[in-house]
Image 1 (cartoon, one colour):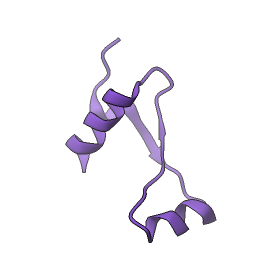
Image 2 (cartoon, rainbow, N blue to C red; image 1 turned 90 degrees about the vertical axis):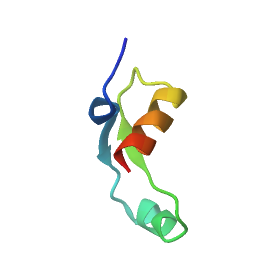
Image 3 (cartoon, helix red, strand yellow; image 1 turned 60 degrees about the vertical axis):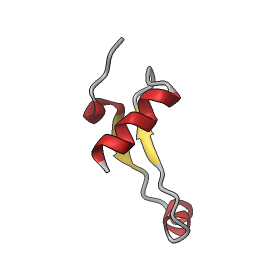
Length: 48
């Protein structure tokens, strides 16, 4: 299954823990359940 970058990353996770990680340069996203690590990495690099 081929997913476009915008389909792989569903939305950012907004929580107290994820906001704390953001200050350390780590970001948390909900991703499509069929996406694998390679697709997620490529989507993040393309979109951000």
